[in-house]
Image 1 (cartoon, one colour):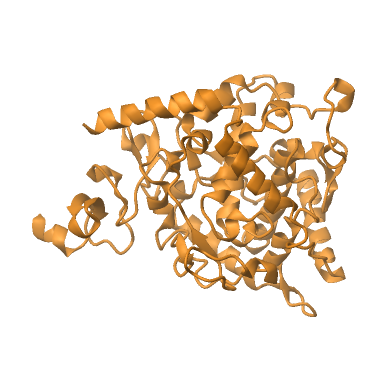
Image 2 (tube, rainbow, N blue to C red):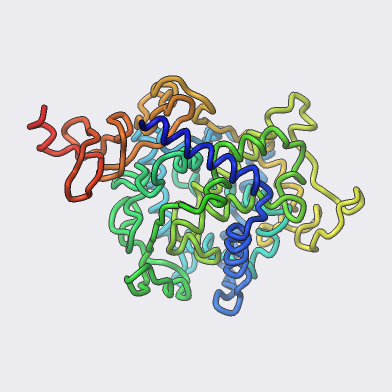
Length: 439
């Protein structure tokens, strides 16, 4: 019966996806408008001006990036891994360095930390070319690399991890994903009180004004994950949409506004349905989920480029008005500085992967067994194979239909199972003493 339900759902999804793959449905238009209002609302979300010491720290990061380019990466990590394909040691190294950035004061007179600098650098007034044009992918590739170099000042073996978000939305309810368990990103409803960001305060003060449901706005990181039931939006983040983008991809212009908004709209959906700060662009970097979203975006862009054997095609070219691409704004021109990272232009962002030897350790596109999905040594076994695609396992109390969909969290003393649980009036994952009694 379950297979029939999944097959019917897939048919509905595919029908919706092919109707709306260009992102022109009303639901997608509404989402885009809300996101752009958030990006451009410079009245509420002001520019964060850097002090001289803060600017010096940023200049130093950029200079080290250029030096790493000329001298090679040495012992620095260059392979970005999916969160659940990492070993526990690799994950702990990453979270330890995140905590260092949270507390590393770079200007005693302002008290601003290194991490807060990155939050401020993602505001529309500070980074006018970061969204809504062809510099979107390039700017964020630079942003991600500079952030990664800051992590590597703490530990050179650390790379910024990403989440394979397509595997989240292939599940019954992406809010039940194992990424929201205590040992990873923590809870996804209300103030974040578990995971490595538990009790994290947000910056700057205008990011304290985000209520979550009935919970009033606080100065702490909050989330409000909502199951994505709107079919046009769900289609945007599906395996099938990325399959189409992959097959039709020829160059950057196929992924950017104003010629094709699908890719950036999919990214917008990943932000917006999680609620809290990560859904508001000027505040989104407060939540570490931000880096997992943009690692995913960069990974998919690079996967599309890697399909070409020709190195020139693989590198790609940036659209120029001289080539007939009209309507490019000043901040999205190929030679526009990628503010505030002014040592690079928008076009330079295309070269980040090749310049720094960045690679991605990926979840397979197709699978036959669960082991196909969980293929790296000492991984968390965070995926199951649905018969063709790798899907994220559910956390404890997450909705399920079969045992192998349940993720064994750290506190579980026995293998979790998918059982009927009266309080929830449905099948959920459990790993408590009741299961041991059942045998």
